[in-house]
Image (cartoon, rainbow, N blue to C red; front, side, top):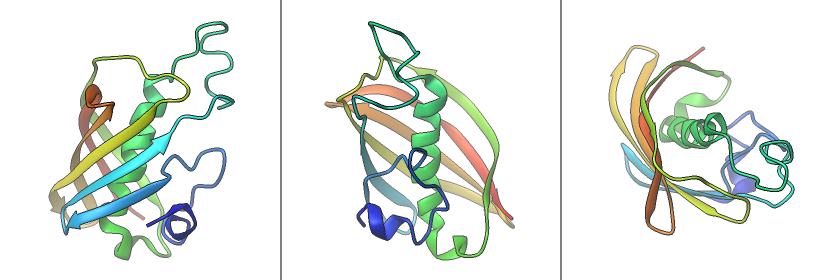
Length: 136
C-alpha cells in the first residue's frame, strides 16, 4: 500500500503520518518504510547542527506500522497505545535515512493487540521493542 491508501486506515495526517508504504506478508507480519525528510519538525531542535530522530518518533513509526497489521479492524476506531515495552535504541537515525520496519502480531486479547517491531536503516538495527494497543 502507498501513502494515499494508508490514509484509508490510519487517522494520522502530515506531519504525523510516519509510514510511506507497507507490505503485509502474512496475516501477522508486515514490512513498512518511511524516509526521514530533511525538514521534519522533530529534527529541527533535536539537535541544531546535528539532527537525529528522537526515540519517541522511532517508536511512533513502529507503532503506526503495527496498527496496519489489523487494518481491516481499524475503520471507525482509534488506536490507543497501551504499552511500549523492552524498547532498545541501538543506533541513531538521521534525516535522509530510510527506516525499514518489520512488525509482527504476537497476541490478541479482545480489543488489545500485542506486537513486536524492529526499525532498521541500511540493514543495521536502530530500534526494537514490544508494543501493545487497543482499538477503541
